[in-house]
Length: 192
Image (cartoon, rainbow, N blue to C red; front, side):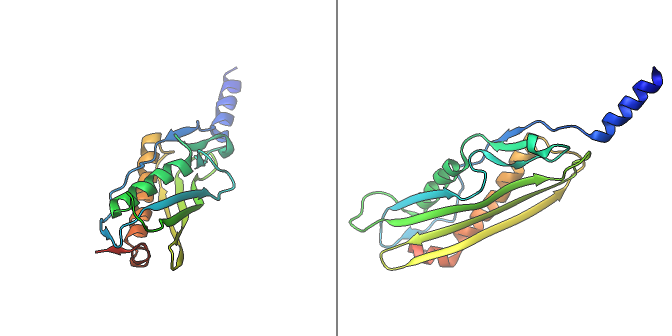
């Protein structure tokens, strides 16, 4: 009997466990370097999720059956990034009434993927984001990709608080880089 229990325990330790799904919350607000818009106008915002798996799933936590261990966001990703983009443009001075045609801004989510290694011990995770911003004004069209890729070695599979903090940090870095881009600010008409 003791041999059977020991054998069962050894087999279970080798198979690893299936990690539970986790849900995190993304920050919708981000403070960008403000400026003034010249001339004053509004912006029409559209976010398009181009990922194969759309909605709340942003990846997996790894482990033995990663497909059963998703990492989710509380709300639809495109909705979160729409509100975040609207807030950032408002900080630049977009909004209100203007006789000029609004600037059209489209953000494509090409990749927004969290992943951890498969297997018994989860100790390596990565976050990769690829966004593309398109701005259309009366005189020009500007399109530019923005990407970030980070990975971390861990002692154990991270909990939801850790994942939430890290994913938000990576998103904030990409957002900061995007809105500090002089080409983008010039097309938007942002004066320093």
